[in-house]
Amino acid sequence: MESISDFLVYSVQEGLLFAILALGVFITFRCLNFPDLTVDGSYPLGAAVFAFMTYRGFGPFVGMAAAFIAGALAGLMTGALNTFSKIPALLSGILTMICLYSINLRIMGRPNISLSENLGHHTVFSLLKNAFSGVPETYLRLIFLMGLVLLLKGLLDLFLHTEIGLAIRATGDSESLVEVQGINPDKTKLIGVAVSNALVALSGAMFAQYQGFVDINMGIGMVVAGLASVIVGEVLVRGRNILFMTLQVVLGAVVYRMATAIALNWGYRIGFKPYDLKLFTGLLVIFILSFPVIKEKMKGLK
Image (tube, rainbow, N blue to C red; front, side, top):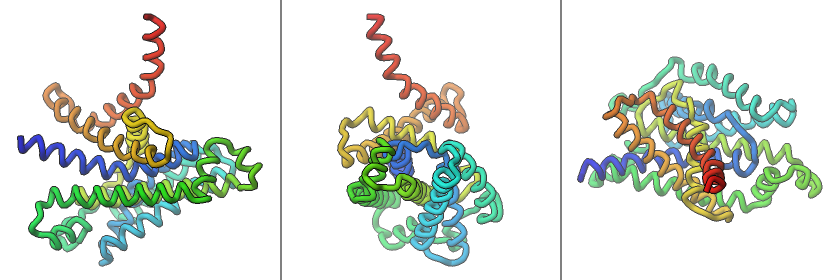
C-alpha cells in the first residue's frame, strides 16, 4: 500500500511540474490559436539558464527568475519572426527551436550538467528540506509544487482578465475584429508568445531542480506533452470560463502524467522500455484528438 501511495505522490509531483508547462502551452494553442513549437527549445533553455546561474553562485530564486526572462526572450524571437518577418507560426517556432539547441549547448558548455546538492548546488527543494527538516521531503515537495502551481494559475487568471489578456484572447478568436477595435494583433501575439515561453522555461528550471540534472535533449516532445495535458483537461472538466479553463490544464497535466506513469509501470511487464514514453504520448494525443470523430462514426453506424 505504501508503494502505491508513493507512486501516486511522485506522479502528482511530476504532473504539477508539467502543469506549469501546460499553462504556457495553453496560452499559445488555446488563447492565441498560435501553434508554437518553440516549447521544445525554451523548456531546456530554462533548465540551462538555471544551471548556468547556479554554477556561478546565484541562488535558486535568481536562477528561476533568469530562466523566466530567458524563456520570454525566446518567445519574443518566435513572435518577431511571425509578426515582423511574416514567417508562418509553425516555421517561426521551428526556427527558434533549432537556434535554441545551439544556444542551450553554449550556455551549458556540455550536453548535461549535474545539480547535486553534494557539490554545493542548492535548489529550491534543498532549501526547503533544510528549512523544514522535520517534514518528509516527498510531501514537502508536493506541498510546495501545489502552492506554486496554484499561484501561477491565479496570476495567469488575473493576467488574462486584464486589458492585454482580453486582447490576447480576442486575437485568437478573430484578428480582424481586434484590428477594428484599434488593437494591434502583432503586439498581442508578441506578448502572448513571450508569456507562454516564459512559463515553459520556468517549468524546465523547476524540473531540472526536481530531477537534479540538466540534459540538452530534455525538451524533445514537450510541446506534445503540454498539448496532451490541455486536451485531457478539456475532456475531464467542462466550462468556458477562464478560471475553469486553467483548472482544466492543471488537472489534465496531473492526470496525463499519472496515465503515462501507470502505462510505463505496467508496460515493463509486457516489454515496454522508458524510451517508449514518447511513442505512448503521441498515440495518446492521436486517440484523444480522434475520439470525437470515432464517436460520431459509431453513432452513425448505430
